[in-house]
Image (cartoon, rainbow, N blue to C red; front, side, top):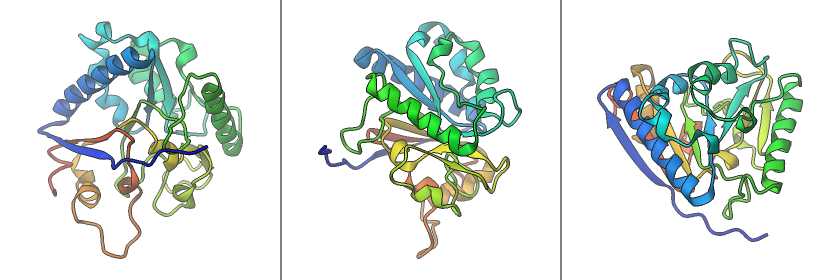
Length: 259
C-alpha cells in the first residue's frame, strides 16, 4: 500500500497566565474539535494520558460543555497505562474515571481500557488487537501517510525527563517503528510495568495537545521548544511528537518561564 508524503506538522504555542486559564482554553479547544470531527465523520476519538492532564480537563465537564458536547459520539483510549488493576490507585483509567468519565455520559462501550488481567506483554498485544479490530470495522481510520491508526485528538503531557506516554529517554521503546502498542517492565518511573502507544501511532494523530503546566517543567519545555537541547545529545522524546494536522502546546506562565 502506498502512503502519501507527510506534510510538515503545524505547531502552535499557546501561553497563558495561569493553569486555570489553560484549563479554560483546553476545554474550548477540545469541545470545538469534538463538534468538528463529529460533523465530519460521526465520531470523535480521544486519547487520554495520566498525570495532571485529567485535572486540567475539569472545565470540560462543566457548563456549557457538559450539556453542549455530543458525548455519545466520543471514543476514549489511553496513550499509555500502568499494568495494574483498573481500580488500583496507579491506574490511569481510575484517574480518568474519577475526574472525567464519571461526570459525562460517554457510553461505557466506547471506553477502551486495558485488559488488566494480562501480563504487560499480553496487555499490549490485546490492546493492539482491539485497535486493529476497530480499524477493520471502519470505526478507526488508518492514516494514509503512515499506515498506522489515526486518532482525532491526543491529549498529552510530559515528564521533567522529557518522556511522553511511557516512552522514556533511556528506554528503547521510544525507537519502536513497527508495533502500535508496546510494553515496558522496567519503567524508570513507578510502577514499572506499563503499556504504551508507539511514536508512529502518536504522530499519526490528526491533532495533539501538549498540556504543560508548572515551574518544574520549565527547563524541559525550553529544551522542547527553545534551544535548550545540548548539541550532540540524544533528543528528548517530547521533541519527537508531531501531528498530521496540528500540534498545540498549552503552557502556563510557569512552564513557559524559560522560553
